[in-house]
Image 1: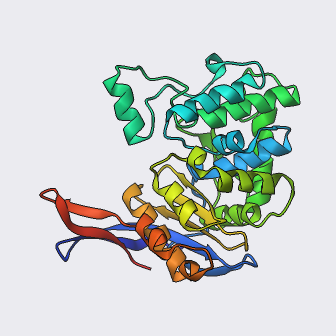
Image 2: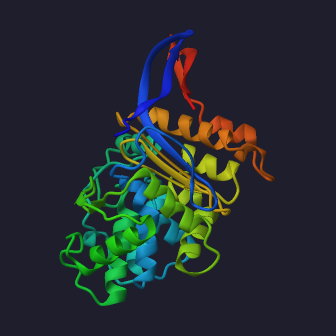
Length: 318
């Protein structure tokens, strides 16, 4: 069985200090594998990279939100003020408030928002936690479908059964359910299955999948935050949809059906954006009309500092 391979090296003053091992896959527009490295067929937990597929399932099950709030349903948001207000807006559409949220309490995920909350002496809250948009959308879906809010995170709840069915249909693989950091079910698939699901959404021209994809494209700052590398990648590559996941998972797709998925085996997030940028550039995305190749390249810039100045970088090995 293939194993993760070195896919990024840590360079300090021209000295190779170490490596991040991982796996990556690139799908052609017809869904076939263009290239891969490491293990792209064994199950992984995509974690929050599954959120756009979960949002797709919720739309199929009856969720009806405007594009900005649908993007927030896909989010690992930074906890900026507009994110938290957006979660309140999702809940208000079905007559709920933040007390209904079943996710854990946390400080904002974004560095700037977290530091601001700490300076103000604010406590951890469910609203600030980066998965609160998904949880608010789950609650709204339950109300729309007439299901009990009680136990909405249980894998046997009709909501979670429906989400798993849609994810399995999109990936073409059976999913194993465990528990994610926020308390919701975390569903498995392979990197190839994850890329296949993103290809389905990215290339959709109508229906629920197209609604989710267009929400992500038109409001990428709701999916992540105003200063994150994800939003920079969306802006550099028009039409792209992308989503990171915990433990250094990343999946993106283009409207032509091409898709990429990767995971650093050690969970080292600093390699994630560097490898994805290199993968997109390897496949000629930087040469497409409307793409800002320099901005795309910059999303993968991961400097190594020494004495407060740049002395190296995380370099992808693709």
